[in-house]
Image 1 (cartoon, rainbow, N blue to C red):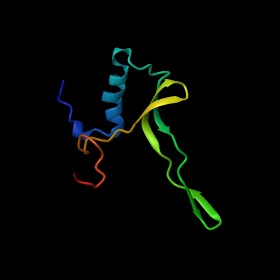
Image 2: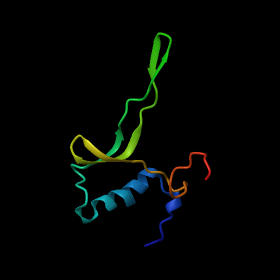
Image 3: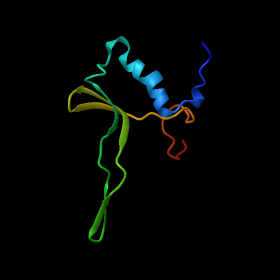
Length: 94
């Protein structure tokens, strides 16, 4: 089998090829009842200007892991392989 170029994979490819199989491995998570993919978990912040209000962009997660229905334990966002490992870079240096 040829070597897989992980840098060329999209976020969805990484989810399908690596994250979902890892969640299913060893029966740790029940994919049908405990894992939701591509979920909007907010409707977006409300922006008010005078008498007009609009909603901002909704927040989305690639994965929401739940112990029971309606009881989310973790929210996961996947990045493509062009991002560095570790925490998200928010412009601060330590």
